[in-house]
Image (cartoon, rainbow, N blue to C red; front, side, top):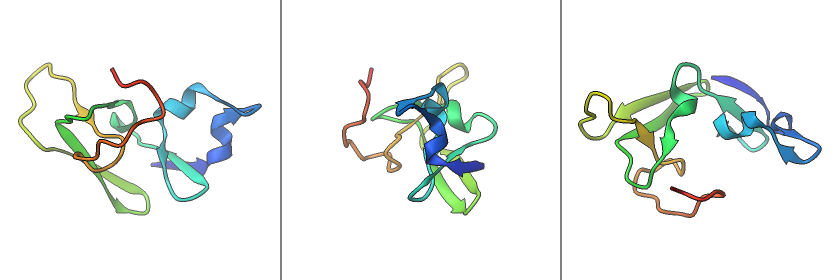
Length: 91
């Protein structure tokens, strides 16, 4: 995890491209997961989940069988069963 101040993902109050790849990490910080962690897409029916293990470690785990070539998805709300609305249009 690369952790940095949340204000750095905005320029002139507008979100940067980096904004779309960050996890909230505390009250005023965000983090980018190294490897593939920051590029998994959101789903309300995810096939994987993530858990914060330590202050700088996030673990991604399958919650169902994932077929070869199938996209890995996570619920950006954290809990795979959380259907709270997102700040963007969910496809």
